[in-house]
Length: 293
Image (cartoon, rainbow, N blue to C red; front, side, top):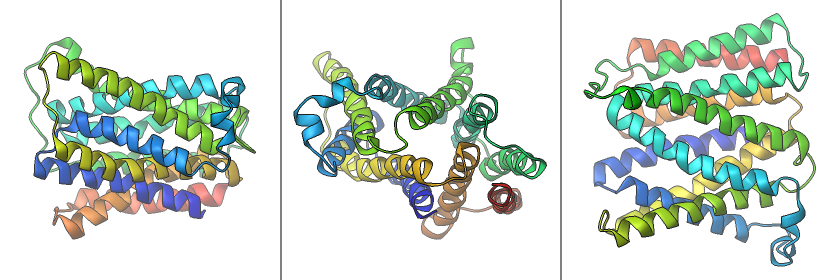
């Protein structure tokens, strides 16, 4: 349980840091790239056995191709989420990303044979309602006059986050139940950071971007909780006997609840009656889902 709590506290920290970046004019893409480089460095530092990496033994591990693919997916979805936030507002981006939990939940029941009952179903349905209500704002951002491609951004975020969670779930079920968790997490961030550096170097070479020191500082601040949030999620999946149909909803709900409450305290953001209702639903959903496991 401790790993799960630490995971959504770190995930909430990421959301709060993006609020700080917005207030201080930190270029988001550059910060994202440096964030993945920092997360990869953290992954190497905290490896239980560095010989796995230095000897090249990781190349023969079944999870290695998944880590490379998932790293590319991470940076792609991260940037899609940023575009969705700019063009449709934080509420739309938040709902689209958090509702992606439907994919691992359905796979847990349909493919991995996890137990299913009426209480768990009620909790999961309540979780979807809680995420939507917690994300609704009184004055959502106006949509830009955009073409069809731009209007598909929220759907891309929804499917992208669902795909990332599903690949993580698959890796956990098949390769990471007993070992390889720290190595898997590290190489995901290595993959994302490498792709990000290539893109950033191209942007710098073509004059499409200028390097900012505060992006480096912001990326370091972002990369540490980013690494820890994913590592703790993997450890929760490996150590808790609740199953992924419980862990993913509880993790997402916990992230929304903690981020909302801390935003209220630190940034004085108004919590509407609808948001409070959503948080109450989130608490009820977590209780139902945990009790059903």
